Structure formats: C-alpha cells, structure tokens
Amino acid sequence: MDNSSIFIIPTISEDTVGLYIPSDQGEWEEFYLDPDYFLCYIRDLAKDCMRLRSFRYRCPDSVDIYMYEDKLLSCRRPHLSGIQFVSFGSGIGFLEFVVDYGQMSPHEICEFAYRFKKTAPSREHYQIGAKLTLQEAATKILPGVRLFFDCEADFKRECLCYHCLNCTTDREQRLHTLLRLRRSYHSDFSVNTAEDETDMVYMPYEYDWWAGSEEALVNISCPTSDERTNRYIDQFKSIQLEKDYHFMYLLLLNQRYSAIRLIEQVAGGSRDLKHIQEIAQRIVALKTNYAFRIVSGDMIYQEVYNRMYDILNIDNLLKDVEDNESRMEMVNIRQEEKTGKVVNTILSGIAALSIFSAAIDAASLLDRFGLSSTVSTVLATAVALAAIIFGVYFFRKNGQ
Image (tube, rainbow, N blue to C red; front, side):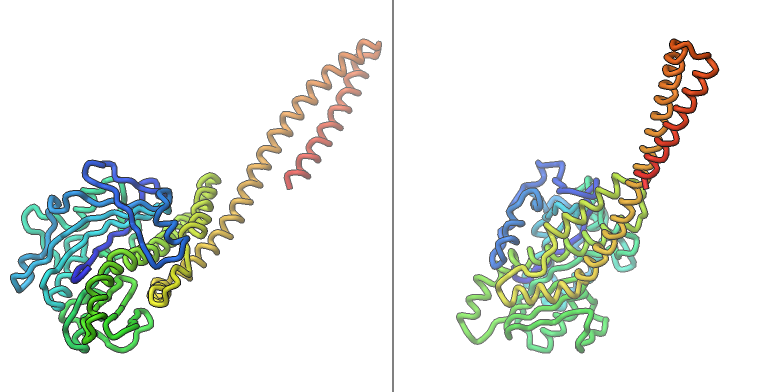
C-alpha cells in the first residue's frame, strides 16, 4: 500500500442496527478481511459474518468523482483505484474510497487530501460538469444507508483518512508531511511540531513513522541503508498496512461511532418500553462483541492501537454508554412498574365485576332459604363489599 490513502465515510444502517448488505449485488462483490498479528478473538470477529461483512464495488471507474484535476499543479494525477464498504453488526458501516498517488510528491498528496476529504461542495470544492462529490457518490452507490454526518448535526462533512506513504525526503520534511496529513492541512497552514496531547506521533523505528488524530491515521515508511529492512518494507510492511493496520483502524472507528450513536439515542429521551429494551440490547452487544482494549500480542500493533484508542476518546465514550445504560435500567424499571400498576388496576376491575356477579348469585341463594329479599340483599352486599376491599388492598400491595 505505497503512496495511497483511504478516505472513509461512516454510515448508519437504515434501521440503525444490524449488518447492512448492499442491495444491488450485481454492483458489489463480497471479500473477506483476513488480518494477521491479532489475538484469536479479533480474528474470529473478522470471520464472523454476523458481526462483520465487507464488499468491493466492481467498477469504481464508472463512478465519476471529481478528483481536482484542475487544481493540481503537476501532470501527475491521483487515481481512484477502489471503493469498499465494511459493515459491522453494530449498525455502523464505513464506505471507503481508495486513492493511489503514483509518483505524486508529498506536497501534492497533502494538497489533494485537504481538498478531497471534503465530501460536499464548499468554497474550496468545485464541481466540474457532471462529476460527483464524495457525498453524492456515497448516496448513489449505497442508497440504503444514511451518512453519519447527515444524522449528527455537529459532525463536519469530511472523510476520515488513512494515509500510507513511502517517503524518501529528509527527516524534517518527513515530519512536516506526517503532521500535515494527520489533519489533512493545506500548505498555507502553519503546522505545530511540538507535542500535542490531542494528537499522537509515534516512531518505533527510524523507518516507521506514525501519526494520528480524531480525523486520520498516518504511516510514513522510508528506506534505510540496510537491504534486509528495505526488503521488509517493500514485501511485507505494505501488506501489513493494507490488511492489518487498516482493519485495526476500522475496529477503533466502529467503537467510537457506535458509542456516539448509542449515547445520542439514549439522550433522545424515549419512554417507549420496547425502544428502551432495544437500545439496552445494543449497548450489551457493543460491549461484548465490539469493544476491545487488547487486540494484539505484537508490541507495535498494540501501541498504535493504544495511542489511537486514547486519541479517539473511546474509553470515555464507553463510560458514558455505561452511565446511560444505568439510567435506562432505572427508566425500564419505572416503565415496568407503571405497566404492572395498569395491569393490577384492570385485574381489580375484573375482580370487582366478578364479585358483584357473585353477590347477585348469593342473594338468589339466600332467597331460597326463605330469607326476605331485603335481608338477603344486605348480606350479599356486605360480603361483596368485604371482598372488594380485600381485593383492592391485595392488588395495591402487590403493585407497589
């Protein structure tokens, strides 16, 4: 995966839960994510078709997306090489646009990424003829899903980015490119090279540079003087970036966006018992099927995961989900209590009617024993009233 980026648009299934499968199977073909270097329960998730499915668009060239040909200064052009959709059982999916850069320079790549990540027309985003924006392309090829930023008003209409570059520039230029790409800054933006607690920079080896933010995950690999290391970069590292680190990033994003969506649904304040129970089930499913703190026994994989986990604020989001789960349990209990009281009231009414009917039968029986109708009616009424009082007391006591 040399000199390429994946531009990612989070989506929500139409019914907000469950795996979404593209309706037009003729346009999509299923493929399987097959990550290595992960613990067994993470690999099991990748193989579980009830929790994760992935699809590849057969003809990405047929989607006429504006690639900023008129804005790039050199004759070198980016190429849309693939469109993918990864669907999680949490109801969250990720529509991915894969762009290859060929021989474009790091500066050109940064300029393109800054423009291309914007999904809707803006001051910097021009449509040429019939070419589509990313937002228009997304709704065209996946009509059955909603884009996450269409449902959440506070989210910018921009893609998340996964950038992988093989860079031969000097150390200072490499760091500058890394810091620009982690937020897809344009060339006029002043990049702060100081440590930033809201972002991460990680350099486990001289040839392996990582950076991340809430907006992107970036890796820059660079050749060394050691031939074996260079062979590893060319033959193995690019495969790891394409398969394993990409999958890791999606695991993180699914946790983040699933938690945000659940918190928003709870904050909606629904009092419908069925809806509350459905949300409670989704919370349990997120915590048991998709939330992971440890994913790999490999030190670098786990360290990249840990740093991005903190940057994406997943731990706090999951704590908010748990807090909301406790509130929902209380609401659920109150709703069940209200339902129980209504049922008890209905049963009390039925019991009263039954007792009244029994009183009439009792009066008729007493008449047969020669008691006057007045006496029999008084006795039957007294018995009926006593039974009614007892019944009301009993149901109220059990309904508390």
